[in-house]
Amino acid sequence: MKIETYLDLFAMLPEDERIIVDVLREIVREALPPNCKEKISYNVPYFYGNKGICIIWPSAIPRGGIKKGILFGFWYGNQLNDIDNFLTHGTNKQVFYKIYQSPEEIDDQPIRKLLAEAVRVDNTFKKKKIK
Image (cartoon, rainbow, N blue to C red):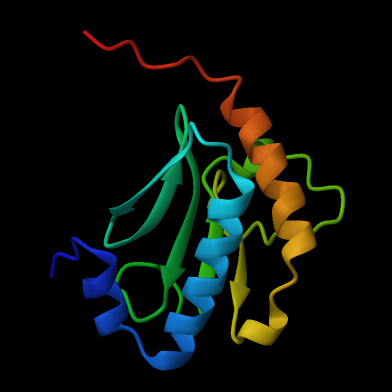
């Protein structure tokens, strides 16, 4: 299975997951600066600047490691200053995340705070040189 567009992704998702993905995508798109980009990678929404910033992984998409809900993960979560202990550390040493089961659980303030922190961390990485 290869998902190449958001239409493909949304067509595959159950309605409850589609709504959560849509809400999270809008928060991320509003919060990230213009130099950050979005693409479908690993069949899910992936946001990056100099390196990966965050990913939104619905449980309906295989290989996400979750059985239910939507995983909202930060690629360099281990480097974020998460003073509110908002993120779950899990078994991955680098990717920290939050799992949402319903749109009502989404509070955009801690997400925006962590996205700002993730952009700060991303800015410490060297920009890729274009040859």
